[in-house]
Length: 281
Image (cartoon, rainbow, N blue to C red; front, top):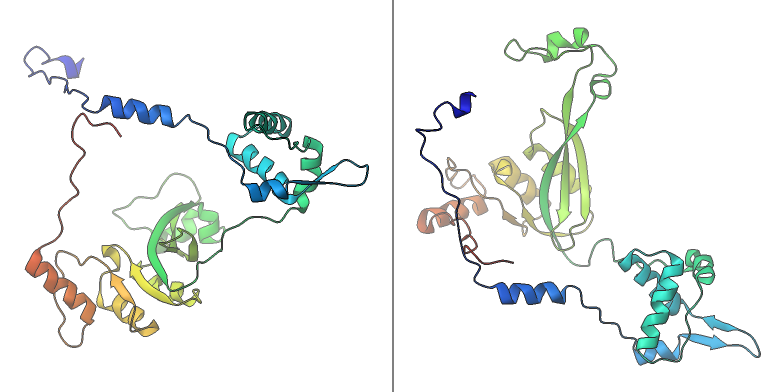
């Protein structure tokens, strides 16, 4: 074998050995992950169910939502969820009853959906991201064959791939609310579109006020800062300058120049310190 030809003369690389330093804490944390704590407030018990004159118990929406939440948390069918609720109420020494699985299934479609607010109130902290999205050439080239579009799109240094269809990439640009992680705007472009050119189109799709914009070094440049400043002079821009970036002076964006002055005085921040060897998390 070629990689074993000089095995007898190669310097052996010993396996790194270390000693775990926090095994008791790590083991206790593993045990805590399996603990189950269940409790029902007195306010919920008062409105858990009602009884009609000589009729069966009528369960409120809170009782049914409790069963559905346990079903989602433990990924159990409705019948097993009914048994889990019964066991939990027995351990809590409560006299209330549990709705049967047929009632939960029938009334689940009528319950109000508990959803967080799509966008939290107040100014947004926008985080710029982009992801490549692979698409077949039929969607990109309108169904034309490779032979028809090759003279315009292919270069001599990059030979044509096998097959008749052109395979290219599209980029998905996203504006994410850094507080909630929700996507507030998005654009889809081809692979040749510059990332910084999508700052304006993304801002046009955001109706709420913006307090801060965070992006990587691909968005560093005077056009990006000028576009952001056109939407609001009080927007804080957090974009790391490139290593070759220089201050533009008075015509340039003041925030970018302040970043460069701070880097010249204090230097760029170092990398985060690694986790000590032998410490489990």
